[in-house]
Image (cartoon, rainbow, N blue to C red):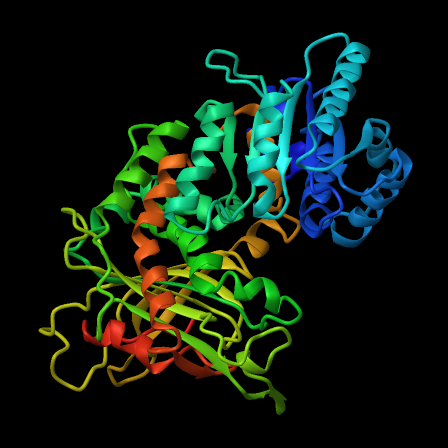
Length: 511
């Protein structure tokens, strides 16, 4: 039986989904993301017969390596990181059309060589080949790559040609509002907006996509999805690991830039946005931007809307673990936050008065990404007497590590006395559909090939998010370590973050 006929996640996907002949060019071909995610994504799309005819894969990087050496690197990446084992039949089909071009990212002559290479491919194919450029490099060379794509003629503005040059840009898209505006201007000098795919891999995760289905395909949720029934929304993006050997990189980033401004705000937008008029990409992205613009400026004063902290030394599993300031490559007086919590107020009819509290941190109790929608407690009438402790009904979407959703209800404990306890109804993707589900990058690469921008970030969306958080970054930079809290490794964060919910008579849940 063909893979597409038995895998429930592939039902409804027609073969190749209408993608034209495509050449995917990966800038940063020797990088970690390429090995761990991009090459395996291409391989698994091939295994599912979802690559277009005349598909070509081109690696581009500074290293001088041969076509064959790049193919060997790609095969090794598939063996180590793919969700499927390497099949020679599948890989041979890809390898026959996998090549490599060496050159600098700021070298116009190298981009001319790339253009010649693509022209040779088109000549062999005998028809136009859509170039899809994937920029998987350090952000410092995003601008030079885009500029050279334009000056070389590899990428041009096309309004009416849906299958012409497209560019995928990895995060981070800017470091603040000013840099995001500048990068967007560079993009617009070369391309039309519909040719640009700013990637956030969280949007490719099944549970994130399922969020829209749960909201708008089930009549039991959307009538309650407002300030009349929902008490608060908590979004947690927690990591167990510390910075490890990436201290130098993390010092330039921090939790707010690394996780909150991008990943977490996408979860906020999808949870809180109004129903779109259709499933068209622009209709969905229009509603996301409207929601982001409705978020009020953050109170940065004492007892305001923000909390930041660094993890401190402690014990995990009986083993001592260092604090952030003791990690390799970290300055003794570093003011980089490893944890940030934000309380958002959305000024619209649906969400007025409902706090959206978000947090992200390293070295927390466990690795989990979760959206928890906590409903208001029932009126204390029928069960007011007798000491019944009713739990708040909570609908939670777990995005990682075990994708699924759960609903907490109050149930009666069997017995002659009336006793209640919270019960959890669980749905897990791995249980229902099996564990070998497509990964986020597979969906995102495929969508970019066919020109579907639904799961990508639009330029004004990125700018709106940076407009909210740039004042926070500026205030923290001016304050230095003043106001920096701490939390023990293996905990759920600092005491200062608890105050964000205490003001609303609530507490953080433990996912």
